[in-house]
Length: 229
Length: 229
DNA sequence: ATGCTTATTCTTGTATACGTGATCGCTGAT
DNA sequence: ATCAGCGATCACGTATACAAGAATAAGCAT
Image (cartoon, rainbow over all chains, first blue to last red; front, side, top):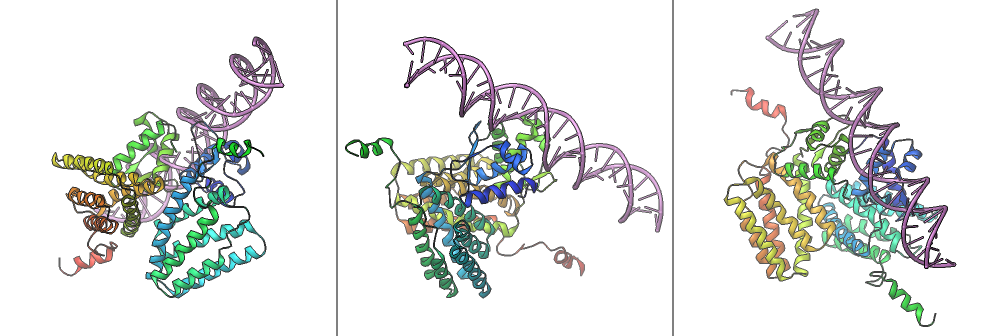
């Protein structure tokens, strides 16, 4: 999987920048520009972009400049649904093979989240909030499950950037602690419920209530401004 | 996602060849050779190989020629576990949004499977058996779910090639018809059970009973030959 | 001033060249 | 006869060149 380390550097940097919303959805990603920045040729930049494109973080259309992906609301719902499904499996595995030191690792992570949140570093806070789920998945001990979940969680950053109300910044540390507590009891049903509720909460923060902004029809918007503004 | 159509041709061909087990796990995939065959440069072959590598069908190690992936038994179990999880979600969605014409599509597909099986075309038969699940996933109406499932099902071909007993050739049409019947009743519980049993059967055919061949330790094998052959 | 057409520039698509690490066969020694 | 060391060849890693399709700006007509 690891390409030539130098292409990997570009990949990692871009990925992180996208996840932390430094590169917002729709941003153009010119090969030359990126290559110049990292001191590598377009060949390697291309490799990085293609990889990101397969992960759904970047959109590549033939003969067009790559952009940070702009998932539609429908895609967003699909992503959350798959995420729900995968996270459930993760939790199930964890309760089945729980070991006390896992609790320590998770607790330490949530503490980091809280620290970032307290010091007002929202970029790190929201990245760490996502990584909490990645850590869970890795502890669950199924590499493929972890890979898919990682992809899906990353894409949730895009969704949050697009549709989330501003300033929500996850604030999920309490919910994370709740999940950890449930896992420590090794009760599958309770743990799954805790995770489920947490995910619904995240989704609620990320997506408009229901089909509020289903599809932004220009005429619908203009209708609101055409009678008497 | 679609690269330059010409790279896509190589990608499609390789993918299909791997899935139909014309290219068995471990086969070397030289960039020059493939490029010469399709009349394209290594650049495009590389793109195709990288894509296949991200899907887990090809292994790329730095400075080494790419090979058809050789999943370990542990990976195989991980893949089946994720597959189980995803297929369950597919079935759940299908029972929720069932429409009669879906039954027709599925039935038609199973008929194709049966035809291929009857005429002794095992390559097509086993490809179609896998594609049945892809069709299910597409009908379920979640593109991401379908993509992940498609990846996972493809990798099951590798597993079958590696660990499956010879000549099993899926013979799964009856089980597929069972799943369709359950779906037509729109009973989620029954459908999930049907799918679950089918998957366990597939896994049983693909993987050795339990941890029979867990890890082929050379010393273990030699021990059997060292006392009195 | 607005809209349409055309020319220029920018950016990507693909092939190819060159350097370097791997692979494999050969020689020679034990 | 087997194995270690070594050189030749082979295949990949990466940069670059050239072609061609988009995007954009300029110019013209209405």
